Amino acid sequence: MRLSRPMITLALLALTACGSPDGEASVPPTATGSLEHLAAEADCAPDLQTDADEIRQAICETGDGKFVLATFATDRGQREWIDSAKDYGGHYLVGRKWVAVGDMDVVTALRGTLGGTMEEGRAHGHH
Image (cartoon, rainbow, N blue to C red):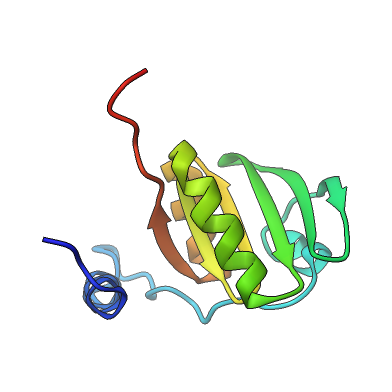
């Protein structure tokens, strides 16, 4: 069965609405802003790798681990990048015109700070 985007969104909302067992608040509103602003929110100093009109991309590291943070000029550019990158697997935290990519633990921790929605890459059946 193939899940539609609305079905996935509803499932994610249902999972996040419960909060954590120790009473922490649920996912915060999704952060917005420049790469530098998002990096500051995540408490990391971005190591800029790509600085182009369409995409800005940096490597960040927090106490939870390393991740790639990318911001995009357009929603379409972001979606095309994510769809292409998912072929390599990975865990994606997606916000409006930004994405963070890293290990599940890192991306999950970032979600508690930046909000956003979780997406998974496609795992390859052969190596």
